[in-house]
Image (cartoon, rainbow, N blue to C red; front, side, top):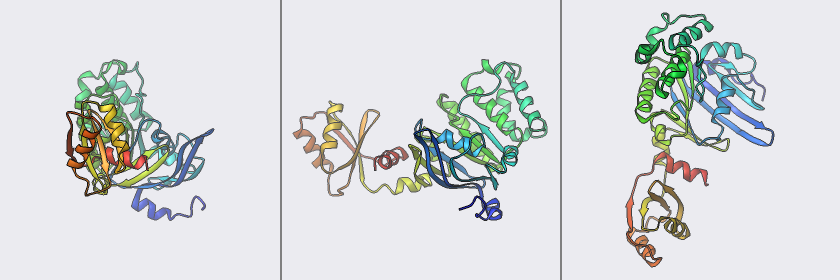
Length: 315
């Protein structure tokens, strides 16, 4: 399949991002394996997975920083290889690590990035206003002296100052306090209403519900693509949260039960997925008592995206 066999005009109308069979290897390590997905215009699309799953590699390909070994990728209707200059004019990119100039002030960093894109702070101020007003009191402070949350807001302002059509955010809330994380996602919702398409990656499963659609990624492969609600709804088995006085032994015994589909440690509980709908809590309790467990607590729970991810990753 040649790079231009796809109907480029339709893609420009329908999708902000389109990937077909994108793969990338680093020597013997397969970073991405046959990635296929598309992102609708004006959508918040999340790439959800642990460190090392391939999220950053995918972002670097889509922002034209590295080349894929195979496959086709289009951003805003433009090919990432042959039309990379057009893409760079149209996208904003906030990498996982703070990459602004530490010795420049807040205002100097923002002015610099505006100049790079041949614009000014004033020209697109309305786009960043709600974010910038929070850091404006520190506009004369060097970027390296800002808190994690303030660095995050400055980096987002710099990625938005040229009014991109597609915004790439690579793990933007990693290492940020819960309050700043909540504020940041509130900002993304507002940006969506301004017509900007947002592709965001995160290792935090709880952030999946804040996206319109998500792709679960593990070891360079997409496990599933759908809305967070649909992914959770498709979880077919019973799911119980279980505790006892001996949690390590509990995990071993739960996994040894022939009716256990999957069992994983989740905080101070173990989540156990049962593939027999007739298997009751009383039967499970008796099984655990027979195996010497005490202080047993069992409660049926609704699956989360993290439960679905764990199940899919072990399939």
